Image (cartoon, rainbow, N blue to C red; front, top):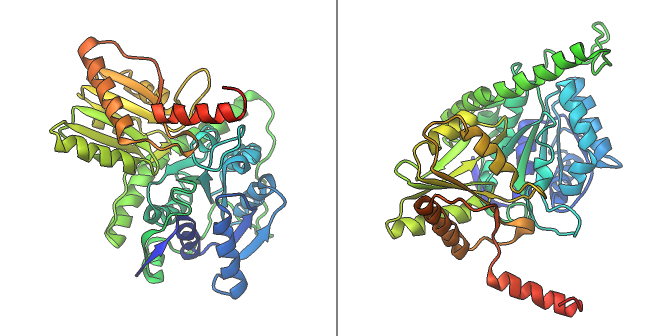
Length: 407
């Protein structure tokens, strides 16, 4: 084991290298391009014994990933933002083929307008495709989660591709200390892949991804995917326990932070939870009992785990780093659905949109969220979805509008 300062992109490349992947189909898009640049250099220099192919699009890339996995190869690939959406048709197809591989998405806000910084509308647009979704907070978690993801995807109770999400720029180009485990440890945890259900063998032909006639057969296979995805929660927990026993680092489907005695909870995902934890620590210094819950596993959705951490709290604030125009925050709706049948659910559940296109969420905005939760508890009135946007943000925006002659 060695420790190095790595960007999130390098950590992802190391995750693929240590996993012993057989095949990497790729297509460049900012901010994930560095991942495939690093892997291609390692392949060209002979450090990685892997077949690497530059494809003509993300649609082709995901198709190649799925078809290679259907022959029994261990496959890794990476994409971002518009690229993920361009390949979206094939996400549904490869999940339906029930082929295990790992795809990492480096989140970036969607066009239009064009931006280069992160939010999560890209990855959440794929939430109904059938891929397992894991959202990570740190560069160490990126590497570790890739190793875990192959174990989850290749488990016979799952057999679905896994999509890992990390924030573009905030993680992809940020250097953090990362422990790179030794290959012997990794092989103890993640042995060579020996597929039992999808392989290419002339003496044993099989049909995969066939057409079916009639809704009855179609319903059967689609519901099988739902059951397999649901199994992924139990498999994740088993894999996480084994990972901790070998590497000493623990990951849960839902990560609690100072929730045990908390009266108020903030729920977030991905790297901005670091900002949320800092705010929680500052509130605690003032004697205010605030905690944070981070959603790591988004598909399957961890309904029961969420209920356990949120039961009996005075108020909950869900910060969505995404927006569904005309509805609000995507995760807010899923969280409130999870709590609907919980008799001891939080007295107020508030919705905030923040961090769109990488916009900062300041301590002042976290203080505003806490004030709104306390006000809702006192008055019994819960406001509609609110955008986190400071006076300085508005001042800057007005300057741009004046420059454009639209002020």
